[in-house]
Picture 1 (cartoon, one colour):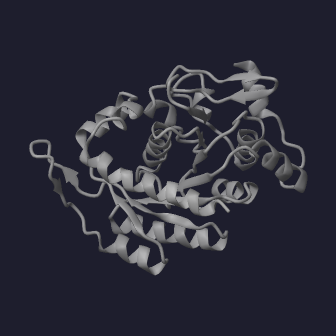
Picture 2 (picture 1 turned 30 degrees about the horizontal axis):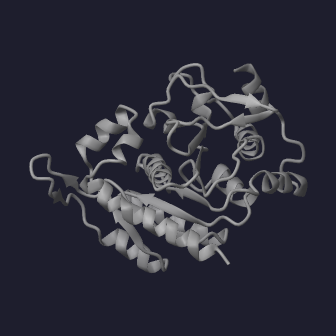
Length: 287
């Protein structure tokens, strides 16, 4: 554990300079596609979508990495049932932890470094910037088809730093819920992507209705007009409308994301559209 903390806490030399960017590009040279998952505000299920995206792509036979860059709310380890797991270091490189040996999915999260789940990350901006550099420079990501980056909510230092550091991002998936308070934020996220020249793959409308536990029919709770209007205004698409599902909520709480993504459900059927869209975007990128 001490060796890992030394790597993460190492102060990056010339953090914003050309040399640092070149080192990160070199370390990610074997990663074919990099997608960020973002949201304008917290509590909309962004990490859930990032986890399902990484798990779904891996279960389709891809080699996938998942970088949990939400330092103040690192929920990815719990979603995969990895609480109590620790990162290891080989040749001064952190090694992603695999939630299952038979699936090519490796995960990096600050949550894998904390001594217990109640320990907060009390960092100012420079410490978070340093950790971001280490996640992409000092992790042995290896040869990947996809690297999925779970960004912290908002459009502040960490999201901006990541999209500026990592060149040639393949695209972004934006997560929202169909309520006005979240839709105002998702429009800010789409404007952010325009300004940093990252193309959105589309919008995922999460918690969009509820699945009846008796008949499996979806019951609408909110209108979808705001999500559709945001997609139209920013020339993108609504990839999926994911309903609330009590069984899915329990699977997350039990750390069984991989198992959930292997079973049939209304939620999974809708999410397949997100996986299809990301794979299509990756194919379009190739020369």
